[in-house]
Amino acid sequence: MTGRVLARLARAVAALAALVVLVAGVPAGLRAHAARTDRAALKAEYHAYLQAEQADPLWDGETDRDLEQLYLDLLHRQPQPATTG
Image (tube, rainbow, N blue to C red):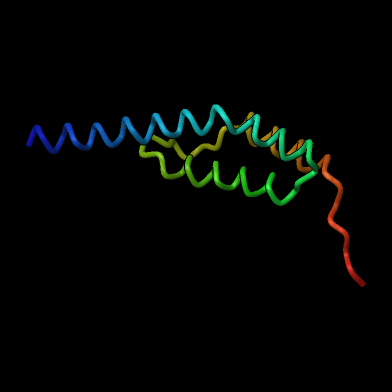
């Protein structure tokens, strides 16, 4: 029993560590995509963050509001995609 508990704890710690590394790089990645006016990459990076956040076993159901606001600010500064027709 103790071995299984320790194995689950080890997996949770590894997942948390991976999320910390991911979160640390997200603002810089979002800003880099915005600086290149790469709207698709900006969206993809943010949605990848959301998926990783929701996969975290310790996720409380709340998205990081500061990161969400950064994403929205950067997204609204991007030129709108050209429309056809």
